[in-house]
Image 1 (cartoon, one colour):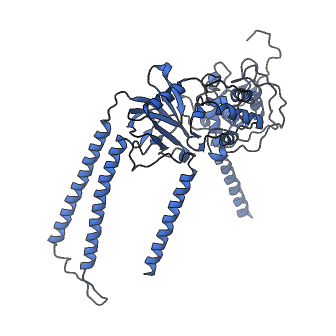
Image 2 (tube, chains in turn green, cyan):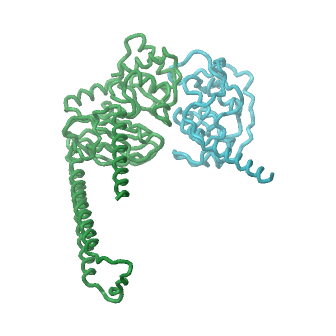
Image 3 (cartoon, rainbow over the protein chains, first blue to last red):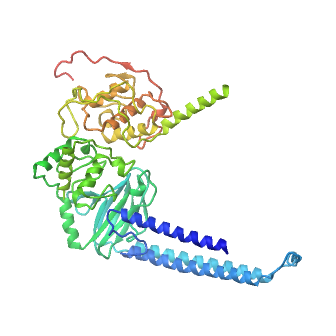
Length: 352
Length: 190
C-alpha cells in the first residue's frame, strides 16, 4: 500500500516536472504564437495523418484494454493456493484443447487487426499522393548545419528569389517543396501541415502540402544533425493569397539602399569585414552562399533559424558572439567596435 | 617507481588524446601581436578593401597543430573562402601548389598565417580583417596537413567533395624546401 502511494507521488512529481519543462521551452520560443502540434491539422495532408493516428489510437487502445481485462479475468479466476498445497501437475502430460483454441483465435484476430492497420496506412498514403498540384508554389528548400535556405522557383530564373529560415505560403494553394541537403542528413517536420521527410545530401525529395488556414506554423529539423540540431527551426507562415503575392514582390526586389549616414556606414562595414565572406545581400558586393541570404532579413521574425527574436539588441548580441546563443554554429564571433556594431545593426534593420 | 612512471606516461598519452579531441567553440588565447603592425602585401582583398595594417603571428606555433576538429574546420573554410579557387585542392592552378615541398614564403605556421593575413605579390589576396583570426589559424593547420606536416591522427582522413587523391592523413610527410622569393621582379613580368 505504501509502495503504491510512493509510486503515485513520484508519478505526480514527474508530470509536474515535464509540464514545467515544456512550459519553459514554450516561453523561450522567440515566436510564441507559432503552433507546433501534430494533432491540430491545418491542411489536408496533416488531416490524413491525424485520421490515421486516430485509427491507430483507437485500435491500440481497444487491444490494450482487452489484454488488461483478460489479465484481470485470469488473475481473479486462478485457484488460490497456500504453501502446503501440492503443485498442480495435471496439465504436464495432458493436452489442453481449450487454451490452444483461444491462442489460435487471438493470433487470427491480431493478424486481421494488423492487416486492417496496413490497409489504413496504404489508403492514407494514396490520399497524401492525391493532393491536387495545379497552380502550385514551388520552393527549393536546402538544409544546412543548422539553418534552412529556400529558393522560390515559380516563373523564370529572373523571378527566382532566395530567403532563409522563414517560408511564406498562400492559404488554399498547394506547395511543392523540393528537399535538398548541403552537408549531412536533415529532416523537415512542420507537424501542423505535413509529415516528416528527410533531406539527404546528393538527392532530392518532394513534399507536397497545403495550408487551409492562415497562421504561423513552426517547423523543426527532425533528424539529429550535429551540435545545434535542436535550434534548427523554421517558420512557415500561411498568408491570404494577395498578401502572399505582395510578400513575393517585396522579396524579389534587391535590398533597399540605406538612407541615413549610420546605415550607410553599416553597409560598408558589412561588405568589408567577415560578414560578406559567407552572407549575401542582393544588390551589394556581398554574394557568398554559405550563410543565410540577408537581402530582406528585417522582414523576418526570427534570427539564427528560429533561435532569437529579430530585435536590434538580439541581433547585435548574435553578431558579436553567436557561440553564446548557439554553441557550435558555423558563424564566428565578429569583434566590432560599438559604433561599427550600431551601424551594422541599423543597416540590417533597414533591409525590410 | 616503475609503476608510477608508467602511470605518468599513460596519463601523458591520455592528455595528448584530449587535445586531439577537444572542440573549442570560443576563440582561445591568441598567438598574434596585440597591435596591427604589418603592412598588407597583396593588392587584392575580398569584398570591400580595408585600409590599414594587419596583425602578425607573435610566436611560431599554431594553436591547432594537434587538434583534429580545428583542422577539419580549416578544411571546410578552405573551400568556403574559395582558397581552392586558385590553389585547387592543394595541387595548385592559378596559385601555387600547397601539397608539395616547395614553399615560396615559408612552411612554418607563423609564415603561413602572415601570408594569409598580409597577402603576397602576384595575386594572393590579403585576408586580414576579412576572416576572423581564429579561423585563419584553423586554415593554417589545414594547409600544413596538405603536405603531411601534421600527425596522421590529426590530419583529415576523408573529404566531403569528389577528390581522387589520397586524404591528407595518408600523404607522406614532405620536407619543406624554402624558396627565396626573387629579389627583384621586373615590373609587368608575371
